[in-house]
Image (cartoon, rainbow, N blue to C red):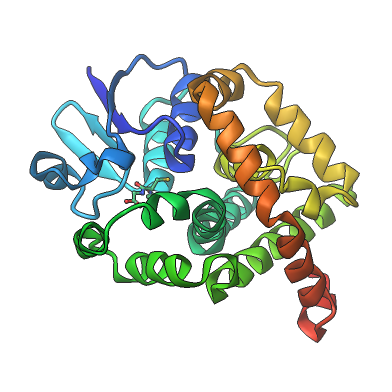
Length: 276
Ligand SMILES: N[C@@H](CCC(=O)N[C@@H](CS)C(=O)NCC(=O)O)C(=O)O
């Protein structure tokens, strides 16, 4: 049995899958795809992952993309320890959080990361290099987001939407924890936590997390329980390179006050004031 993961060190979706592999004590071969060198666009990689993104799992002769699906697949294919709750209701709750990541938090973290730091990499390109880079992005939504952030930085409308997606997520999580639970789906740590942790870690490393959690101690305590796990330390923290810590913190701090304003503005609206 052979498991190979094509991934990138500081990528939220790769962190998610690495945590699953670690929690299940699976050995795997690492193939790094350097996103900043454009290795995701190489023809051989595109054959595995036509969307030109990481991660991709190769299990013997089977190729699987989409980090949420990879996480669930690994959990089912290698049964112990189970990272999904047994009860159908709790499993549905768990999937609510993976949907939350795939339908809002992922784009949110990407735009915040671009607005804060990756934008400088785009702006360092010549117009021709930028055109070639953008043309290679197969997902047109992703291309639009990058173009708009290149043009408007933190003022791009996608950034506000990302801030709102995180606000809704934290409202929901806070409410569940306030009901007396230690974990979000069932009574154990599960894929719900694994799905969310890399996103919240990126916010923390960009010095932005307390914009949402400053007034939510239950969320902070829950996140601390996740950060204590060996899988988090080995598969998230240890992969981040020295220079990346400083880059994330400096860049995130630059946009922090605007991000906090966006959250305040949203909370001042009717829908923002409705805690769901
Ligand atoms: N829905 C996909 C998203 C994958 C994704 O966006 N991966 C990012 C890194 S976290 C990526 O490869 N970005 C490459 C790029 O933007 O060119 C999944 O969950 O696997």
